[in-house]
Image 1 (tube, rainbow over the protein chains, first blue to last red):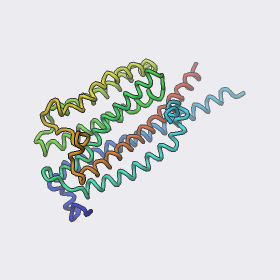
Image 2: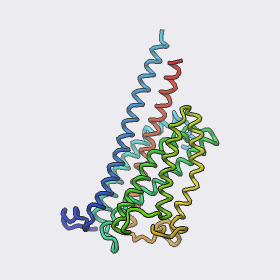
Image 3: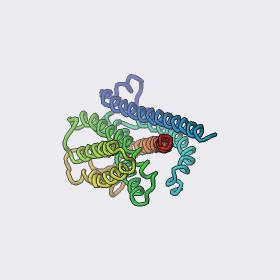
Length: 63
Length: 239
């Protein structure tokens, strides 16, 4: 297999449809990156919260 | 394996190695898929380079429909067998599915402008996918409107199952209302009509999207299990 584009500028031009092709791809990358970021942040937040509450519970029950 | 998924604590243990595995596979397959579809797949003889939008539009449509189907399966297992993990999976998949449905609609619109000459048409396929998007939003709105978790879970599960009527409508919309969107070209009688040079990179991107979706769902389910455990401890501490 050989690449379909002879040069970087040809790739960036996308046969005159650069706005459409890179627009659609860029939007997809942005939304998926947002989903990944959201998953990392909520996961981290809930884990820290749970660990803090577990410590609080243990502190409350110990003599 | 299946019963392991039904128990939240065992699920956390499973996810400890399933999640990193899904992430690594997603990164590898996505890298292959992006390079293949953007650089090596040939341009379409009619659509030219705009056909490269297909490699993200079609997989997002698969995830849009697949996530809803996953939610329906989770909702059934929750309603019939009382599996908390089914409820957790459905809750976590909803915003992810909604995001992929939005991507499907947006990338389809961007692809439609140069190929069909319009951003939007009230075509059967386009309209039924828009309805799917609203079903996701309605599901999430209903969940957040009810404070009591057990009531919210039940009501949302029922709403989800009612909405599954839309899934076959999406599938057959291109047959019933033959207006603008093309007919099925991959899962159809007589095999795919798409040329292998375009079909293979599309399937790789489909697997990549599936792996991304799986990783996001696993991560979201872990966070939701931690959240529910934390909520339970908080309630006990306050009483």
